[in-house]
Figure (cartoon, one colour):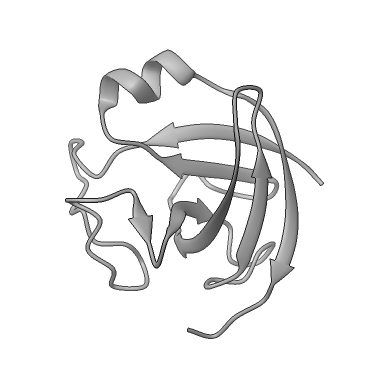
Length: 103
């Protein structure tokens, strides 16, 4: 499924570094070996395991976060820095739901 992809960091104005599911991501962009992403929980349930393909990489991720601007077919991928988030920008990414999970 095609999504509008963007990137975010736990260190931004108004960010706490704690995901909507209570996971502290201030020291890692991974949780249980998977990248952390923010989703619209009405489109992709929280804790879902996803296969993600961007223009530069493919990886497995877990949906642990939400965001005010994440509505519909939008997804935010957690990265280490604001500089990297700006460098990667916005683009179409492709998502495959591997598993709906309840932690």
